[in-house]
Image 1 (tube, rainbow, N blue to C red):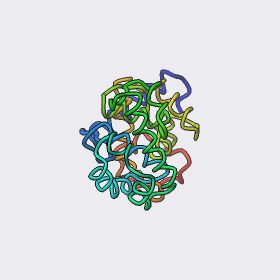
Image 2 (cartoon, helix red, strand yellow):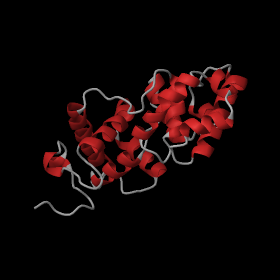
Image 3 (cartoon, rainbow, N blue to C red):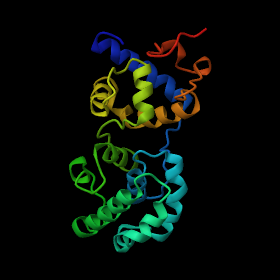
Length: 219
């Protein structure tokens, strides 16, 4: 890992530049049409893959397209739709609680500050960052999912496994205008090339600048 903040910033800029060339269009992997749908999908994505979430959200959003509809839904109805996801009972409870608070406190409008968002059931800093960045273009922080954590460590951008510390490390070295897209691009890169159990290092656009921390040397 580069030993000074200036060296880390320079390294981070190189990473960002190469990722931008590889993924010029940085899109959220969770399928959604509205900020509310994105919030619901992100709540469901906890400890679950985006692909699995995307497999159930069409049914969820068809039946509950907005906060009012979801707030009126029963626990049994929501659980039935999201049952294939992990922790489905807690997630159904959080979805309904989130919708009810949006109806009761925010007149069905999604708040656009991190402080307000984290008062919603099921919404922590990561979920709030996803919504603010993707739905409203507000760079409130860097979303740290499993791909971002793993690849940022491989690249020497952080030495921590703690998402909060990783976020602080990345905020310190990434240009603020890249906070949102960095995470999207890392997720796509992790799925396409830097695959957890079989990283395709020889085909990686970052190979020349990646110290591959923790991996076996290439043959």
